[in-house]
Image 1 (cartoon, rainbow, N blue to C red):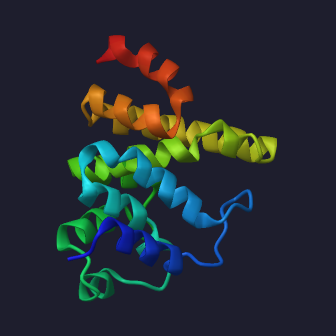
Image 2 (cartoon, helix red, strand yellow):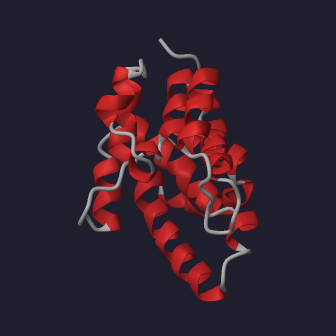
Length: 171
């Protein structure tokens, strides 16, 4: 069975040479997502570290299992992986059927929405993504316990705490 440190090293190697939309090494994104999942245990941290491996590298779920990744961790990664031709909102609805995948996607969304990242994007892209991610939060946050959402965003993107407070009356 793999340790968190081993999975982090695996993710680093899998994403080696990749950068995000603003040129930061991609591993920093998966580390931030994983950090938000620390309150939920090592297996969710592993899921956070691997959440984009199937989608953004040559690795498949079967190959991940063959390397000794815990099967339930790989299942969560599969649940958050984009499927060709599936509209984004449908993907988010599919993810919310799995409580663990929902938490991973909440952490991913929170980091993708972080002002330190979005402020570096061109204005048109920033606006488009802000709308997309806020719409996704409507579905994701409604599918999770408020305390879990708060735990994640407190770590990954505290600027979302105001939005969470605004939504409390809706829950």
